[in-house]
Length: 202
Image (tube, rainbow, N blue to C red; front, side, top):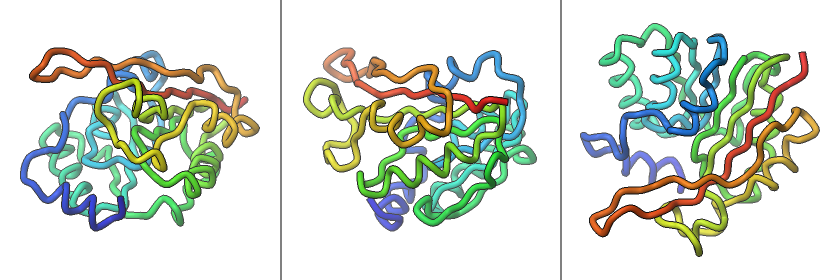
């Protein structure tokens, strides 16, 4: 979806999803010393705000201004507005500072396949020496074998595709699918995500 479509979704007063951080982000960041973080495609800011609560100084980027307004509101409510810098930018043209961040996260980035690789490459290049790259996304297999998530195959991808894009920039520690339990009126269902974690040599 484009900027206008996302802004229409974010126009509702309540948050579209939970305000809690992504469970895989929480698990993967545990134990990392706080520093500068870059949260790309931040949406309503739930992950950026959680990182700030853990002591990170976060630059949160998204092209949907209404999502960023909610992120600002959430950061203020949680008392971490001073640790979260919000930037309205399209990731297709956005150029983060190379080597400028101790943590770079992309959580459920949805872009067409043709636009994915350059975005991932710029994200990987933004990781500082010794820093961490973390991506969580709806896996391609979720469309047939999992629950929920976007059904357009053009915005779904795999851990292998991510590694192809960033593997020459980073040391890849993890690259696989993960299961996420989703509560529904009909009981728990399983969504399939892909997770890639890497780091840059000091």
